[in-house]
Length: 204
Image 1: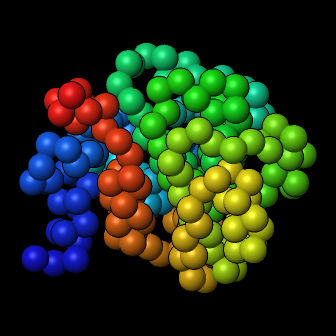
Image 2 (image 1 turned 90 degrees about the vertical axis):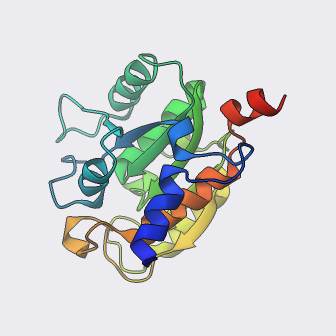
């Protein structure tokens, strides 16, 4: 079996035991950053790979207003009662953290990729919080929006695992990652860390 196939099988949840969480047990929300994510961005490619993934759309992609973006995420979260995984990028990571600080609600876990630096957007106080659910921050060595050292620092603040992706820019369309198989593997590991409510109800 190829590496890509193995990763996609993990993410789709081909587990042998009902006690192992599966991606299918969760709603997955894709939360892009400033200017959204174009068709070749890994977030968009993942949505084509996994059609059940839903995108959180902002009215003004060119205006990074944290409370407004956070409220939109809350509005989308409230449309469904399933436990939810967040797959966020850049300013979408700050949006996710801000929402969790106000009301984590149904969020079961978050993959926070190439977060924008809160200092650059003047929102440090708004995202200075430990997340109440499993999370992973992925940082890049040459990301112009946040250095790997700063990403690792914020991972510590948020209580997140930190994964260094190498020097791959802002981990976006320009990074040339295709379907970003390595990211899918990180998502699969995050899913495995989360106690699935569905599995818990079955075993209980």
